[in-house]
View (cartoon, rainbow, N blue to C red):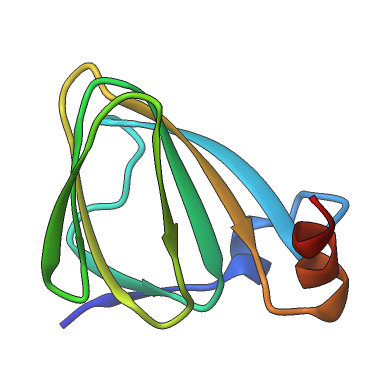
Length: 102
């Protein structure tokens, strides 16, 4: 069994419900297996992150990034010193157009 995460609930206090930034560390990361209904660009800034996407394991080192697509199964394990930035965005045309312009 896994958790479902929805961008609209994460961004409810944000002026834009289609785009959300969150700093993550071992204290506020997601425990267990989960699935998002949005894209998530995870950028490791410190430490290491052991990450599984659809049961394939990766080790993220500082200054590495991973793009997770909607509906993929995820499992994250942060080292005690790990920090990351999660850039979350949905599938709306305006957000996808922005990312194709940069």
